[in-house]
Image (cartoon, rainbow, N blue to C red; front, side, top):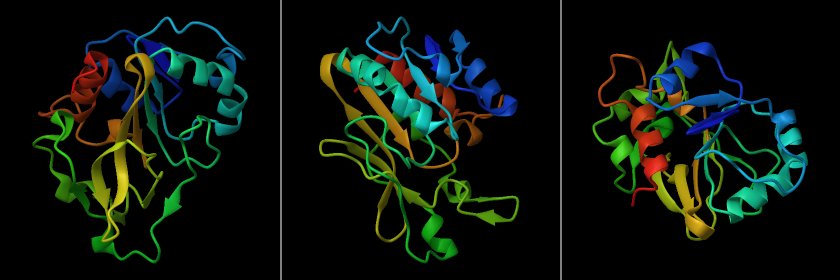
Amino acid sequence: MFYGQATLCREPQSQRAALRTAGHELEAVAVEDLPDGAAPFAHDLLILPMQTDEIMLGRKRAWLEGIWAGGAAILANDIVVQPYLHFLRPFEPMPLPGVPEFQVRRQTPHPAFDGLPFERFHLRGGMAGVYGVGHNPPPEGAVVVNTIGHGAYAIDWYLRGPNGALFFCHGGNDLSAFHSGAEDEPNLTHALLGWMLERAA
């Protein structure tokens, strides 16, 4: 996990590079080292990479709910199996998808996703569904940014909360693995972190 101007949890070195080149200070923190109860959040953004220990996040729920109520920004990747915030619901896979169902589609304009090659996001190294194979169902009031499948599964969404809080959810592999290399322009990771840190509309 990371904090700083952004905070991350442990994640592959290649994807961490995309975050470290975004122009923000980062502090890597193990999930088990997060506070167990109410404690201030001294950073601007919390990043939860894929495969973050959700059992441990559940043990830190009092702290997570507290920083959410206090206005924290949180970027969460991966599927939610055990919800760790009150508005999250467990992941729902697409039923019997074919390859075309994995295609990413824009639903709501968002500056971090402008100009990206969505037609390639769902295929990589001979595998389909790399971007996502379902969704973490968005809560009431969330803005759906991108969908997959004919059922318009909300693969990317964000929710605004109290005191300027912002939660961006991607229900798949780390967003930093997509169009976020050193030579990529536009750069998804850089743009998304910038948008979240600015709490842009």
